[in-house]
Image 1: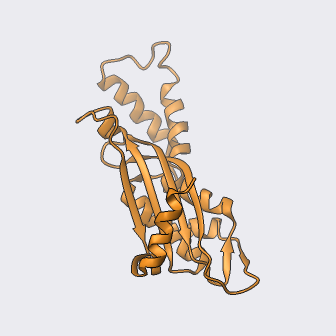
Image 2: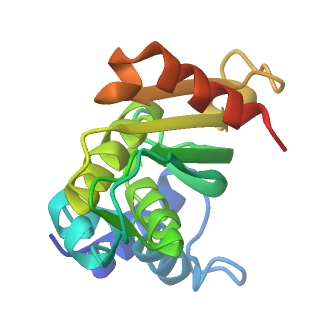
Image 3: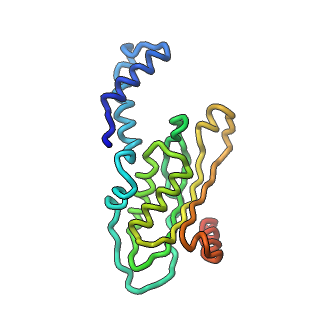
Length: 193
C-alpha cells in the first residue's frame, strides 16, 4: 500500500474548511502539503507488513557458539499515533529482549524495527506484538519480550485530561512467557540503569 499524499492534501484542506478557517489565507496556504508530507513520514510503516519489515532489517550474524545469553536493548525512543483518535503516543520507550538461537541481529536493526512498527496507526498493545513477531522472524527465536511505556495524548490532552497517566504494556513470547527465571531476569534487567 502506498500513502496517497495528494488525497491527504485534499482532505486536510477540507478539514480546514470544516473547522471554519480559510485554507487560502497566509499561514494555511501550504498546510495541506506540509501535513501530507508529515503523514507520509510518520506513517511510513503502514507501507510494510511485519514480514516485509523483517526482510528489510533481517541481517543477522552467526554466533561463535551456542549460548543462552539474553540480548536486551532498552529505552528505544519512538512515537506513534493511536488508531482511535489519531492522537500522538509520546515519551514512548520500547525495550526488547530475545534469547538468540544460532544467530543474532545487529543492535541498530532492533531499534529500526521498533521505529518502523510504531510508524503506523496503532494500539500500544499491537506495537509490542508486532515487534515481537518481527524479531521472531528475523532471529528465528521464539523467545522474545517487549516492554513499552508511553503517554497518550488522547488521555493527557483531551477527554479525561490526566497528564501524568502512563500506559505500560508487556508482550512475552516463548520462554519469556513460560520460564519464570528468564522472565524475572528480564524484569530485573529493565530496572538496571
